[in-house]
Image (cartoon, rainbow, N blue to C red; front, side, top):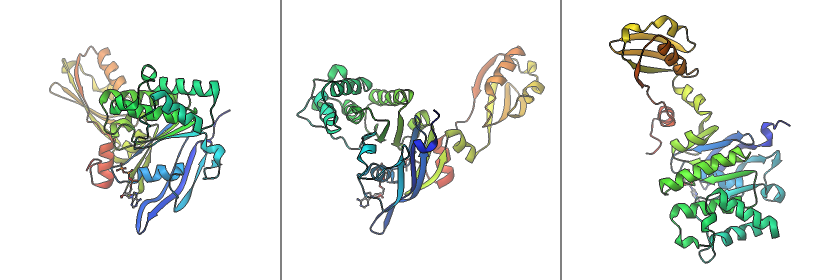
Length: 316
Ligand SMILES: Nc1ncnc2c1ncn2[C@@H]1O[C@H](COP(=O)(O)OP(=O)(O)OP(=O)(O)O)[C@@H](O)[C@H]1O
């Protein structure tokens, strides 16, 4: 059966006021099952408040949330068992071992006996902590503690997991471990909602990106769609060993190549961002007997998108 979009997470008009401050302002987005949504925004943009309202930690001022086609309300306990939450702040019991911490959470979700044991074993394996399961979290690095927190949210094998800035302040190895674990979760069909102010992580992971700032959605879409919003073309410079051998006519015939000129040792191209014809250009040059020494192309990233749309840097 093909899943429809309403089988995933649908957030409509979510708003949170603290007194006169509007922390989250009419936020709407959706994500299909089995995909990763990256909620990207600078500190204070409203990411945690958004996740807290969706997961029921915080009452919303207005708006609606449906998950797997059902309303996500505080009283709908059945649907609440189908997702997991990794909060921004660590929530670990220091006097319990890693496995006992995970087991405790599994118990809260009603798991018992072999189902609980399997859940604990699987969750610890996903985050690479099986070998450390009998150690207490106090002996762990910050990154390992964060991974344990993720295992606690996975123990009941949720279909969707919310992660609020899970890589803040941890070592690069743990960060990479977490990002790889998230990719594995998606490959097993899990839906992931991931907040971050690190655009590199969102670029690596997210199937769909929602950029928020000052509580409002500025833009949403795939990375290519967002990049397309700020520019439709890019300049590529290819340094070649034999510029005289370059025949530009076949290059201009490639879809997405808008201009091609040879200047000194360099072949300068203007290409459409959408069609990304670079591989075909390189193959054509090789066919022409041209040696390619270097390819330079400016990086159009989410930082550029954010700067373009807000006039500010993501990490101001
Ligand atoms: N309980 C509260 N009372 C008043 N204002 C609040 C409260 N919680 C959050 N805010 C404000 O709402 C805005 C959004 O905060 P939020 O924590 O959701 O941002 P964020 O994008 O998650 O940032 P960070 O990464 O720093 O947590 C901020 O201006 C914050 O000061």
